[in-house]
Image (tube, rainbow, N blue to C red; front, top):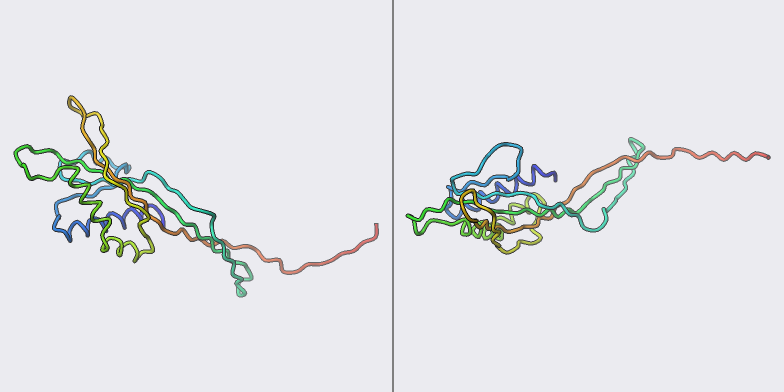
Length: 179
């Protein structure tokens, strides 16, 4: 599966899980896209890819296509991309029960560890390998001081399958000559 369909699957599955829990007012954006989104003042979760690993060697299966007289080599790779989920929420001190960025990130982690989320991914032959713990990263603020950005990493597994054609030798001729 390519990056774009994979991030769409993760994003739409997360939005569906949030909606099932009664959170219709949370944005989920792909971070580091080529568009100029800026930082939202709404409750927003950001997802971006941080690694694209693979495990082991690719598997190969070769099938002879008699009709076209070629060997079709089917290559299967197991990929394990890691995504980071983070959040920004504008703090409102007048609303003591408002969600913080940490609350929002933990909610996303909880949704992504749910059976419903996993079933949506499994329907597309994608699975969750590991979901990490929520951690705070301190970053410089645009105002005086620093702010914490809560994040967690989630590692997904999926297959990349492609087919190549290998030409077939049709005949072999022996030619023996005297030297």
